[in-house]
Amino acid sequence: MAFLEASALFGIGAADEEARLLELYALSTLYFATDGANWFDNQNWLSTTVDYCSWFEVTCTDANLVQNLTLFANTLTGTLPSELRALGAVQAFELYENFLFGTLPTFLGELTTLRVLDFDVNDFSGVIPTNLGTLTELRSLVLSNNFLTTIDLNFAQLTNLESLWLSFNPIISPLPTELFTITTLKTLLLDDGEWTGPIPTEIANLVNLEEFDVFNNTLDGTMPSVFGSFPNLATLTLQGNFFTGTIPPEYGNLRNLVILDLGLNLITGVVPATLGIFDTTTQGNPLLDRFDVSFTTVGGALPVTLCNVPNLFTGDSNVDVSGCG
Image (tube, rainbow, N blue to C red; front, top):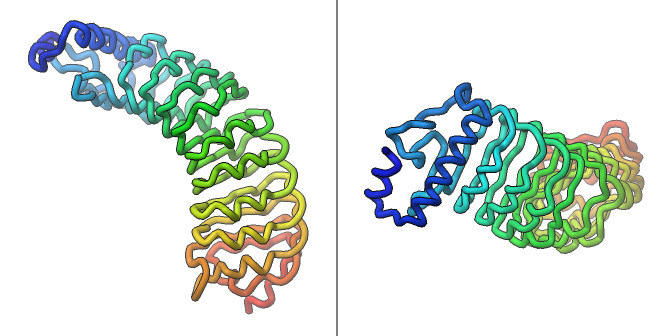
């Protein structure tokens, strides 16, 4: 009754009414498939007197089709039903911090209006499906803290992607070269996985990068000097890998840097004098909050302008901090 009254009130035509009926069915199926009766909050869900656009954490477009479905941290338990492919206008699909499991459904690749897909902190496993790579409107893809093991998707078509989180997944793979062709990327979080091999030279394409984190993997090769040419880079975390060589002096160009974590690697040499521009009291970079070369064989005198970095870690290295007074 509520659905029919809303259709009349907003002048919804037959085609739109059919789309809304499919959406109503899809949302109802989601409720039953994920134990909706025991959600933390299920206000108005399955109500016969409240239009589904007013159900808890459902918002709709001006055409009264689902635009955002944001049931995060709401104790959803189960698998995602294929009926959700009917959400043809959805832009934000956020189900993070729940108890969803099974493989990531391939129907997600059919939701071509998606801008945000966030399934962080669930129990999804297996493959990241190929057709996610067709979501050309996607801005943020967050699949961290799951049990995903394989990537099938081609990143090359994700030309609007700004944020990619794949942290805390047991993905055993070299870093995909095509990932580093997405010039719009600002945040790339790949920490606590099982990534192998060197960082591809194509990373030079990520000129808009602001945060790069590969902490605790098995990456190797030398630390790319090209990071020093990314003007907006604020976080560079390479800690906990098998990188060799020396600290690139080009990192001294990073005037917006807040975190520089290089510890727990096989790097040698000295802390480059160019990093002395990170002067937290007068000139250079007043933003730097963390500098870490602990558990490396880096040596030499620490540039005195790094002495005032609030979180300075040089333990189990050969860095001489006596100049810090």
